[in-house]
Image 1: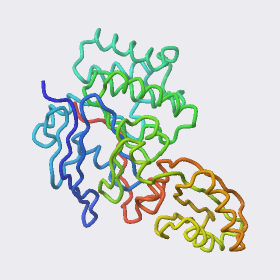
Image 2: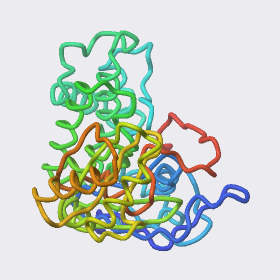
Image 3: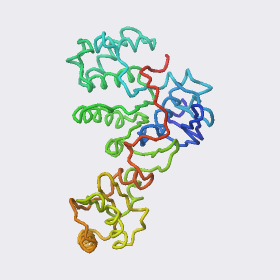
Image 4: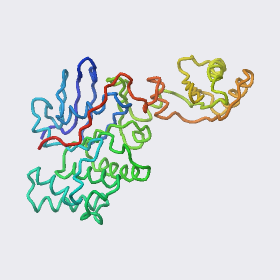
Length: 335
């Protein structure tokens, strides 16, 4: 059997004059969950669409489960499951009928499709709603059903493209539990997300993507170590004084100005520090000497938000400014 991981080598994709991907490289070993973390327009969905054979790359190569996505698309489609940004379910069918339909389209015998549907409905806590029309499902239930449809044929590789977008916090946590279970079962999973907490919670390895390229890779802890030490977080009372506060802190902690992240709209400042709790005292003294009033001040370990800010200078929630409006596909690869 071919290796069931994912290999991406020098992937390039253009849409007219817009370069969506430029030389993207990453590897997802068999049985691992790798997160692609980045803002809207960074290229995450383009990567997923290429890996699932919905788009052809303009350069580079990629293989899924040992099959080339361009030369062997049918074999790739037979080996994968795909959950896109929108639940691809039929609202006029019941939950059970949706799963059985996908199984039958995948040429499963009727008895096998029925049995697998029942198994997945139970596993995703949908058994009680199995024979209800999907139009009456909540958003979280639809997403779990959509994920179940992606697993009906027990694929080797699973692509999850921002699976929790638009869900309320409770539904998001329930879907996290489902994905964690799949990860612990040894599924090979590629997860795209712009939620830092989601990548931190689910991904065993993270590739940070921005502007169509991978800018950093590692575990969550390895990426956080790039920031180093602790992070001093403060919000000034007068947002106009944020630059003054940043300058005072840069001098107090001997931190180069480019390493200090200042949000002028919110009046917040993030400063990497190495002195632990004493940094709070030093910060208060420096700001008092500068005559800057503080609304909030704290010290914490670096988060993936801090990593992304330090790498890119902007938040992951901020879309790539030159990205065209996305064309949102709702379907799955043809079987």
